Image (cartoon, rainbow, N blue to C red):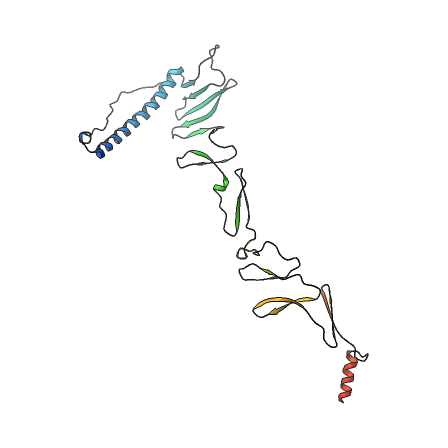
Length: 260
């Protein structure tokens, strides 16, 4: 690699009025401007020094961060900067006799690293930037939010989360609004409120309507000459015999007595 250095004039800002002024505002403004120019010169100087070191170290475009061993070669574990490319610097490590690229810095100031280890972070965690744009560890619970009365987020304590439905799920979200339901009970609607379960019905009980109120469970009752027999899932209604006559015989008797 050949480096050609050209001498050039450096122009620094000079503000005599600000320098001689007794006011702090003008002087501070001038000092900031001067420091900005010096910083640009410093950045350029660093870049030139890297190129000079690459040239001086071996004349082949490599900067070795180590010394040669007794054999005249660089031992395993030695780092070097490979500047043979016109568009990027390669950061390389010698492993078992071969130079392995671990990262690079290209002409757009983009750095690439393989198997990068960040000692200031926590293993098996997400990475995020803090207010200072530094990489820090983060948990998933910091990035995922639940939905009120619908989705619940639980922090598992190891960087992961558990997502589930809110229990009980509200009626306006498609749920019942209650955590448990009465076994064998009939459910009654309550608008957007939780459903109302009736008690478990006994044999023969039916929900009987009541204007403006919830239905109630009741059984059909027997009366004179009417029998009601309640079973599991069934109701049998019958007519009792009068003077050992069935229903048809009783009608005939009634018609005959009336002269029809």
